[in-house]
Amino acid sequence: MKFKLPNTFVLLFALLALIALSTWFVPGGQYDTVLVNGKKVVDPDTFRHVPANPQGLVALLTAPIKGFVEAALIIGFVLLVGGAFNVLHKTEAIDAMIKSVAKAHSRSQLVRVGLIPLFVTLFSIGGATFGMAEEAIPFVLIFIPLALALRYDSVVGVAIPFVGSQIGFATAFLNPFNVGIAQQIAGVPMFSGLGFRFVCWLVFTAVTIAFLMVYAARIKADPRRSYTFALDEEKRKSLDLSAFERFTGMTLRHKLVLWLFAATLGGMIVGVVKYEWYIHEIGALFLVMAIAVGLVTRLKADDWVAAFVGGAKDMVSTALVIALAKATVVLLRDGHIIDTLLHHLAPWVESSSAIFSAQKMFVIQSVINFFIHSGTGQAALTMPIMAPLADLVGVTRQLAILAFQFGELSTPIIPTSGITVGVLALAGIPYTTWVRAMLKMQLAYFVIALILLGVGASIGWA
Image (cartoon, rainbow, N blue to C red; front, side, top):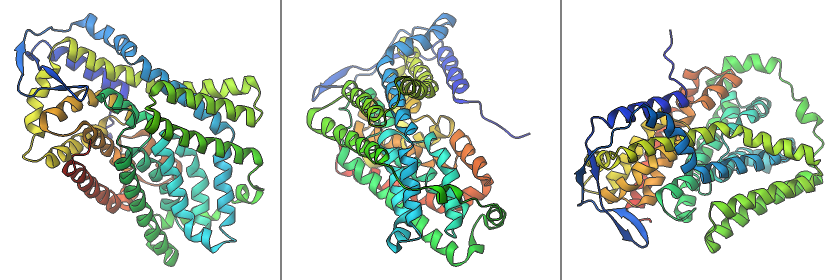
């Protein structure tokens, strides 16, 4: 019988119960806070024990609704953005763009050389800006036939949309679902630190492209070197390229939708950098995008509402994860033990150098990512601890957030991720085969993450 981890909701509620139980045994503690540049930070020399406040069954059962109330702004934002992007998805503009480029592959040497870099970059941008993750799964069904037709293999077909979007998500510079929420919780300006985050995203995306291009060239030269050679031989027998053959090109509406999407991302960057926009303004911008897309594509009001509500409905599980994660903070705070945990965790993370402290945070977040895969939920769960912990060990809060992000770099190969398992099932690739194909790339990610965290710490990035 195979071991299977409980789902995220069960894990989070079990954690809630464990926290409630621990408030009966862990002594209460408290740090004083001081204002630094208008922001409250923990004073590491002020820890003292205070009376504990044990949390019973009533506190445990009411914590989720309290967490929902305290995270209402974040939850509302997630639902709003989810609805807006589902309206965008309904137009099939992104799907049309992919098919258009794929069709041009046979006519242009430039497209043939640039196909992998282009699509990996596009999916990585999706992950880095609007949190593309599960949305990449359907594209696997497009890219596997495309990869096989171009004499690549299923690994390439899966990696372009899946790894591309996951790496973009993990190294995001404008993703409201991990960066935005983590910064909101950590008390730093929304989407601040954009420059260094963009450099990190660029490095990881370039490394992903390089690995895939080298692997694809090797497979094209000798198909037997493919990790999925036998599986792909069977797939090629029933290869259906009719979807690409029937495609007649992008319509004017598709192009207008893509321009609106690009303008929205550009507007968000300008608003955040120049006008210090926050969740309210960014949420309003995405709502305007959804309305404009509906008008351009002449969606009927009922269809627009159905698409928007459907997208928001898809985010309900994420919203509940945020509420449960916030509930853990409620219990820790009300039980007076959150500062005690910080006090005892600090020596494990503290080091002679802020570089090593940041790298230890990354390792801790990587372990947590094995159990909790929701970037939003993980931010809500860990940043209330990691942000003040960063103050204690001499790491900037921006760097603590980056360490949290980098913890998600392992998502493409962890067997507890529903997205990973779902993608591999859809592609028909055994898990062990996939891990063998991705192992060198993952090791490169790990080393590069350590280096970039070291660079961030050495320059005092804040």
